[in-house]
Image (cartoon, rainbow, N blue to C red; front, side):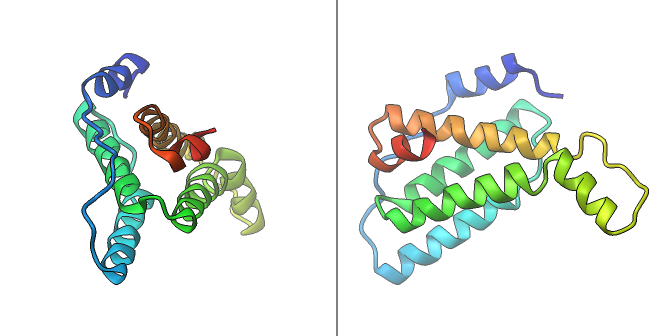
Length: 140
């Protein structure tokens, strides 16, 4: 299980480089962004420092793919907040189980989702400190 010290170790050594990517066609940029968003949203909970570093690099790649396009940033924030934070929180999982008539409880099932959410927000904060114009708004 990752500790706060493990996560800090990853961020201390991360080379985020969240600056703009080279110019490409509009279709290629949209495809790269969609692919990067899918990878981040479908990533599983990291259990080691290496997996944590990999997730951090995936979020940094997503930030690069989003560029300065406001609609991309709206999608990032909505995907992270809705999918990673709210819909898989322990309370939401319990509510879905109750609605489905299942007696099974998913104790702590949303903890991994929240860890991924917090890691993604830390990457956005780091990007804002690097001067990314949209990241500072999104991380706030």
